[in-house]
Amino acid sequence: MKVVVCIGSSCYIKGSGKVVTYLQYKIKEDGLGNKVELSGTFCTGQCQKGICVTVDGKLYSVSVDSMEKFYEEEIKAKLK
Ligand code: FES
Image (tube, rainbow, N blue to C red; front, side, top):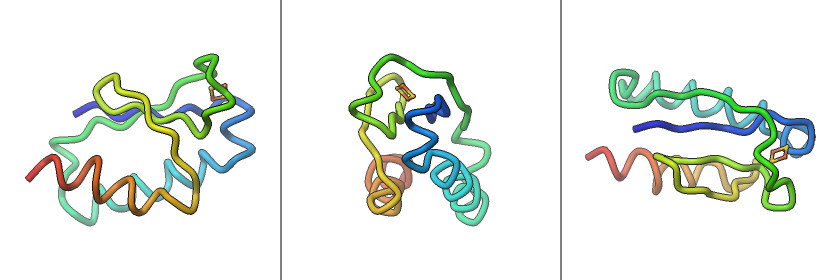
């Protein structure tokens, strides 16, 4: 599974750095490092939807408040 977090300036201001740190931590904690490839991208042109995160190419609009739910539902749950 490929997870790409936008670290362009608009998404970064909204907290994408925190999302990356959180996802890295959870992926490690849950031992999913061999299943999830986490990376960053520059602005993808959809700033109004930010924080933009794609999972295997599908775009999700994530916030610092929703990142836990996003991880549980869109990443962890789908790898079981
Ligand atoms: S900065 Fe993330 S889509 Fe523009």
